Length: 186
Image 1 (cartoon, rainbow, N blue to C red):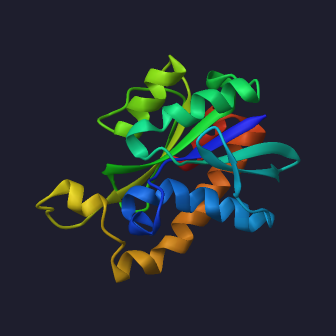
Image 2: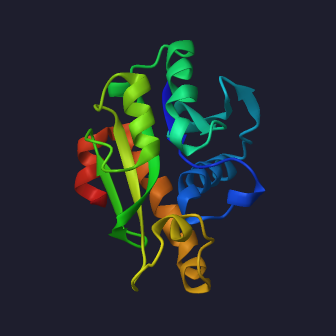
């Protein structure tokens, strides 16, 4: 079974923030499939969907961003999923312009604490990730405040398209693998 992990922070305080775009992407996938993400297991909320005929587990860790691996590693064990082959992490990326997507087959955490946690708990950097750009067009004073803030009105106007493109990239990863997905969406 493929596992798509949206990284974010649980709770209303963080809902709709830039740092939670991973949650928003998996919520969009669930909505498109008509299936909720509501089963509580392994310190995460999960939902099973079918994408292009393939079973996929959508995951929203409840451990907060910096401990995401604490939820994902047990789920990989429970569902006999190989992180290298079966896991895709969806994360925000402050180094990419707003709305730009970057798919990678593997790599470092690049300063992202959620990815650091996944790498530590999965014991590998070799899992796919979909980075969704949140970089503003203007200078940011406090980076933490920026990523934990809600999207601007202008960003909200474009957000639906960003979420739809992210879902298309994930479907392509499920059906065709990471290399073709990188070629199309990077």
